[in-house]
Image 1 (tube, rainbow, N blue to C red):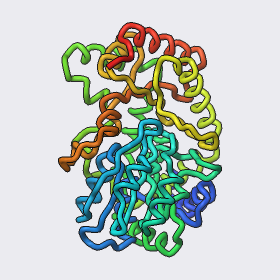
Image 2 (image 1 turned 180 degrees about the vertical axis):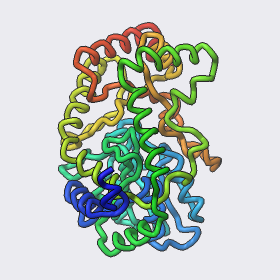
Image 3 (image 1 turned 90 degrees about the vertical axis):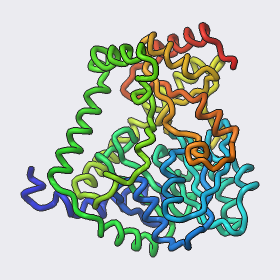
Image 4 (image 1 turned 90 degrees about the horizontal axis):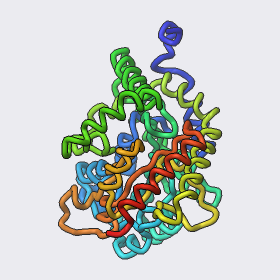
Length: 392
């Protein structure tokens, strides 16, 4: 524990170095390290100094903590439906929803594919609304050569275990406004300092998640457990779902970002681009094998670049597909994002968000998977499609 002996485990120069490197990569004037993505959104709201009941528009299909946090801070939350290609906010739906009273638009980039951020930015600007980009999935993705996180006045990223950059939690706010960046930095620095108990817990969690997702461990232990749980109706939902209703909370998501985490982030920024390239190659190989029989989340603009954090397919009989693929040895994930309007009981339905929640299934195409394994997965998916079909 050399860093502990030197006193640089919690505070040190790496934090500002990481912020500077991150801002340069995204292409913005400043970036601020934060304890979590959702904490970053909270800090952004505080920096903006919005009045109670300010009008905030979110995508109807996204991570529920986003509208929940806005509502918990006293803002009036409204939704714009998603469109079914990128699965992000539909610009036409936003144009029909936004008014000159709207203070904030939060556009979420899902699963590594940018939403139609250029159209959304134009609409927000025309109405004088602040655009915030939720970039938790989209490190390195871009549109027109401009990185996700550089279109809005603010963007925020997450560095949890499953994200492209993993610093055992934490995140980053990017901004076009250096003055507000300093305001966020001051708020973030006032968070309670972390301690060795926190570090031990995070190291254990990260190590555990790394071990159980190792292919050998998964095949010998985790997969049989999932197959057993599958036989007990409804009992495997917590394993298959990326979202849990009890996760709409700030508990465990606050606290001052540490110098040790920043050092992890700096190290990963040096090696992540080849990993992202491999992830994209795997995703495109899998999609290419299945595109004639499976509908995938996609973009139809040549200058959009995705990082494919998750390969996302839509199946009208999603639950049946998930069960059959598990029987065939392919682990999948669903319900990572949700129809937020239904969860927050606004009483208004959004057909795109409802369909997305009902049909989305994430297929494995991680950078560690070989070409042969990708082809094997594609064969199993095709077999399941042939058996179940793609009709409703």
